[in-house]
Length: 375
Image (cartoon, rainbow, N blue to C red; front, side, top):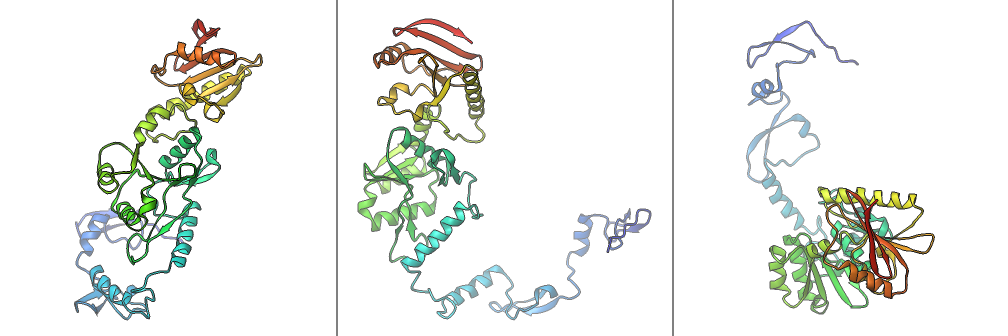
C-alpha cells in the first residue's frame, strides 16, 4: 500500500506549538528534536512491568521484547553476572575448568585463518590483509609483512610464512597459541614483524618464551624504530635477541625493491608510481626489454641498489634506471659504479635517472662519462 502524503494540510506541534505542513498522516511533531522531547518519559502502550533476576529491580519493558522470554535483566552488568554463573555449569559449558584440547584448538585456528583469507573476518584492524600477486599469491596480514618478504627475496633468503603454530599448555584463558610470521630454514631462526605491540601480543610472547624457551632464543624481531613501547618491552623480555628496525629498511629499499608498499597517504608513493609508469612507457616506445632489478640473479646486489629498472637494447647494450621524484641517490659514486660494472665484461650503453624533468642520461664509454643530457 502506497504512503499518503498531504502537501496542503497543517498540524500544530504539541512540543513547540508551531504550525507545520505534514508529509505523512501519522506525523505528530514538526521535527525529530521536538519528537524526542515530546516522547521523553513516556512508555509504549503495550509495556509491562518485569523483575530483574539478579538485583530484583522492577522496570518497564516493551511488548516486542517480552516475546519468548522468561528471565529478564535490567542492565548488561546483571546479565554478565548471570552469564558467568551459566558458564560454570558443566551441563551448559562442557569445557569449563578443562579448556579446549590441542586438536580442537588446531581446528578452530584453521577455521579462523580460512575466514581471514577469504575476507569474511570483520574484526580485522586493517584492510592491508590480502594476497600479494608478486609474492606467489601468498596471504599476508599487513604491508609490513609483505614488504619484509620482498626484502628476504631481494637478499636471496629462503623463507616460509607462518609455517607452524605453537600451542600453550596449562592456560585456559587469554592467548592460547602463537604463530611466528617467518621461518628462515637456512639460518634456523624465527622472525616476528611487530608494527603494534598491544597487551595481547605481549602475553603471547611471554608465554612463548616461558614454554618454548629454545625456540624463543632464535627469534628476530622487526619493529619500527629503536624507541617506544615495543622497543622497551623487547629489551626487557628478550634482551639477547636481535632487533631489526623497519624504518631503516624502508628508507634503504623502498626505491630499490619493486612493489614496495608505502602508506596510502604518502605523496611520494603516488609520484614514484606515476614516474615508474612513465619510465616503462618511454622504454617500450624505444623498443627496450624492461627487467626489474630485484628479479635479476646478480652476485653483487649492493652494486645495483641505486636502480629500479634494467633494460636491454637490441644491440646488446644495457641501460640502468633509477626512479625518484626528488633527487638521485648520492651516497654512491657513479663513476666508481661505472668502472665496477665495466669490469664485469658487460657492455653498458648508458644509465640514467628519471624525475619530474624527464630522463637524465649519462652515456659511458670504457667506464668514462661522455654525455649528460635530458630526454
